[in-house]
Length: 202
Image (cartoon, rainbow, N blue to C red):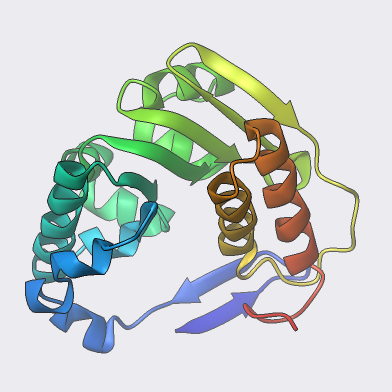
């Protein structure tokens, strides 16, 4: 993966899937779900037939076991290439969706924020939309339930900010914290990530 930064710190990726294209069902046995509270899947996993089939099998096993599922669309470019309807069909229903603003608009075909939340909530139990410097919001089929701002920080590199957000949110969720606290933790981690160069700040 090649990462390109513009002067504002926004990043673009040039990717080569490499060995990821060889992901298969044998790599994802149901035993991976033993003792797991939630499985989170990157949208990148759905954009090639072999990995998609493997991940869909794992998600089916998770649903049978009652393990919660979270989806991160991961790439506006790939979503545009395959089409949002195909992607939503491949993913199926899930407990959580973590999308940024561009992904939410692509997946719904709607520019209005509240409407995006409602439409995504028809497929995903809880929807989190990451809004960069505007913070993030959580809601579902009834619309926006919680919206929180982001702190003002110097943005150096946005690489990994979404992953840092998800990690902070999910860690708080698995600790049993309230959703508003989970959102705050996600925003805090994302804001920290953009202040460092690279996807894995120290």
